[in-house]
Structures are given as structure tokens and as C-alpha cells.
Length: 154
Image 1: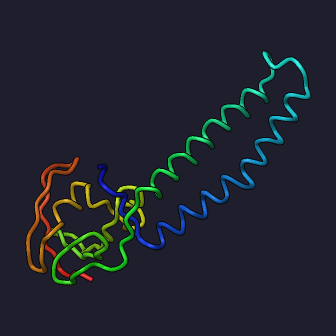
Image 2: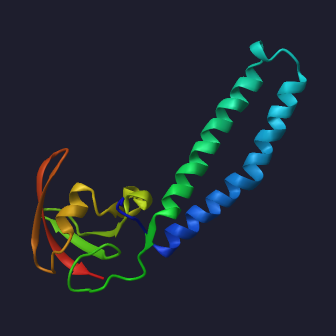
Image 3: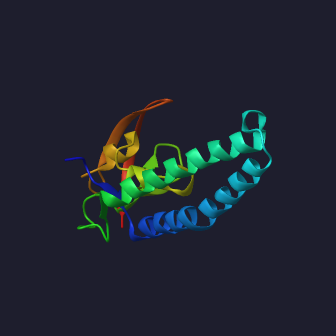
């Protein structure tokens, strides 16, 4: 059996809202574009038709992707413990010479590093798993090997 897609309740709600939008208004809009393009006649040289078909393909692919994620999801309510890093934890770390940074450990489907959400499968995320406050973690990053200390777990 495949590993579950770990999602926070917010991540699940966001995916369900996107799925609803894609299956409703976006699908209808594409159907209208296709009907209009078909009415123009010769489909072999109709750029609007080909673009609408391409967009439809991407839309249906994203719908299938979201449905698969939701079908095999495990919802992370709250971490089991605030003394050990696990999926769902907010972890504040500090690398020597840098300001502390706080990350929320989430599943890969919900990861958004620019907004502080990192996957538990990422290099930093996997180095943090099962660590405690005061522990030093190391991992290989694109810029080389990094070491950071765990300051706080929430």
C-alpha cells in the first residue's frame, strides 16, 4: 500500500476548494470555449480549439491528481508530542550565524517553502524528524552540508 498523503485540515480544505472550482466553473468555462471554437468550423487549423483542448487536458489532469491525493490522505490534527519533532510540528531552528527560522512540517502535497511549510521528506524536514529541543541536525543542501540547532517545537 502506498504511503499516505499527509495533510493539515487547512491543506485538505484548500484542495477540496480547488477541486470544487475545477469541477464546476472552470470545467464549464472550458466547455463553452470548446463549443465556440467548434462552431468556427475547420478544426485542423483552429488555434482556439487546440488551445482549449490543451487547457482541458491540464484541467482534467489536475482534477485526477487532487482526487488521488484526497483519496489516500491522512489528516494531521496536532502533533502527538511537543517534545519531539513530527509531521505537523512547528519547529524553530537556527543555523550558526543566521537568524532563527520557523518551519511547519507538512506532507509533500502541501509543502510551500516560501511560506514556511516544508515537507517531512525534504532534506531539512527529514533531518528534523524525531529530534528534540537542543538537538543539532545536519543535512546536505544544494549549497553544501548545513548544521542547525532546534530551538523550539510547537
